[in-house]
Amino acid sequence: MDKTSLFSIHEGKPIRCKAAISRKPGEALVIEEIHVDPPQAYEVRIKILCTSLCHTDVSFWKVESGPLVRFPMILGHEAVGVIESIGEHVNGFQQGDIVLPVFHPHCEECRDCKSSRSNWCARFADDFASNTRRYGMTSRFKDSSGEDINHFLFVSSFSEYTVVDIAHLVKLSPDIPVDKAALLSCGVSTGIGAAWKVANVEKGSTVAVFGLGAVGLAVAEGARLRGAGKIIGVDLNPEKFELGKKFGFTDFINPTLCGEKKISEVIQEMTRGGVDYKLRMRWFTFFIDRGFQQHPHGFRKNGNVGDR
Image (cartoon, rainbow, N blue to C red; front, side, top):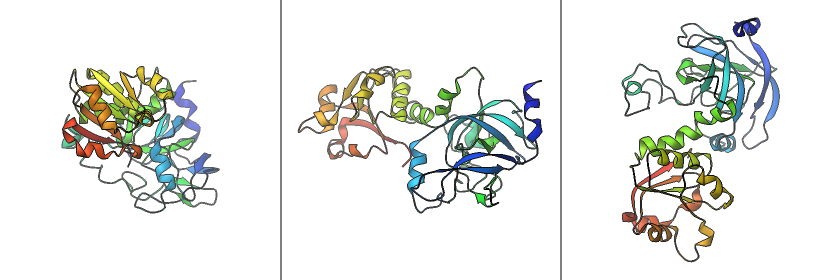
């Protein structure tokens, strides 16, 4: 039996499966049985193999109002899956493909998608509020009572099955471990891209990274790949420092051990004048340090990275 025939029993039909549903902001997710509709044109239905938790999921789980807050909702946007079935007009993908769903669209046709200078899809990227990319608020999820469940960032990976538009898909080699590949859809690409594409870190430069979570470690990896000479990590948790060395960090600062000195002053002393690039994880609010504003010459290029 070939791998595509394994999925044929559900092709064109709704699938019953389990999902972790967020019904109210801040309340525990509930595991429920849901129905997942078959994919429509330009969509595929995916069996989720591995998913991870991103800080953005936590942020929107807590938020009580705003254009992206609609309950009930299936969160999750870092994942890897295998295509179970495909809709019409789907080119480049087939049943059995291992894929990475991504929240940022790529239509492959507009000027920005064809350019190496931008990844802001002119056709789709201004809409992050819809449930489905080409069908507006139409949902592919229903709970056991037949009520619609909202999607999240066009992925909704906290479900055994989900439906994703091909503008939000990347095909992966089946040789890549799925538990590691899942991070490529958000955390790793955000961090490496911040150093490589946005900051455009130069060879031999000095970089300071504030917050050594998944994104911060990826920033360091991006800076290392670009040839940075000194990469300074700043974090409250000293246990992250040893791990950080594997991603390219050369020096570390624990703000609680700086005494009366501002973090900026410590960095200026370490670098004899300041770093070339400062990249701060936006959720790492501890590091809003007035010293940076008072001595802007100490940082040649600043950047905020993250979900809010």
